[in-house]
Length: 316
Image 1 (cartoon, rainbow, N blue to C red):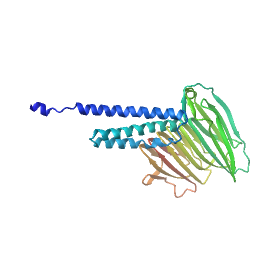
Image 2: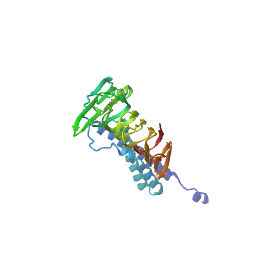
Image 3: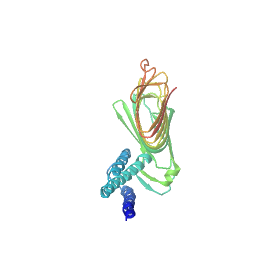
């Protein structure tokens, strides 16, 4: 009799835990598959592009479920976590791959040159890149406003150009948002050269990318880079008095080089990160400056915002 009383029946808890796990994975696959299917038929009009940033909500829901004893409420939180995780994974695909549709067709490789002529009347220029995943390089100068070489199995590139007062605007992007496995394996490469005379502003939006940008020979006023799971090598110059840089990255590796004669300030708002700032002093919470910041005539301001990252900033 005592043995019967001292031996609790755990089978009910075991069945409840098993049902909770089955519910979680069932809802996860159901929602993720439905999102992919609806997206491929252009039936989704809501932008999921940046929702991958909400992944910490999954940890919160799981944490709450640990304090809840009622199996029905526990299943509710488990189901919500599954829905959010499915949406985050879907948004991760859109963000890091830079694509909107998936299939398995094979494609030919596109190889071409992009040429935009330069006029001495152009004092300022804006370059907007929306190019998804791949390998991207900017270096050296050209007598044109922009000269580029494309080698891509993804799709053709399109470029728009318009003038706004004294500013020339360029927008370069992939011609479509449709990707197949054949395109993935054949790669996507873009190599650009720019004219050194205008004052440049850059706005780059890319996914899982290998990025090598050398702006040492350009007058850079503003630079904004949004990227996914990327590797970034960035070299800044000192041909303009004030340079403003903002980098937003997911799981990324960043190597940034700044001129030794310029004063540089870094503000960092990142999650799990490894950082190394050469010859910088921590002047406030998440704010760093070079030792010559106050005396330097030219200034570089860098804002780093992202998730799990490795960041190194060196002076040259």
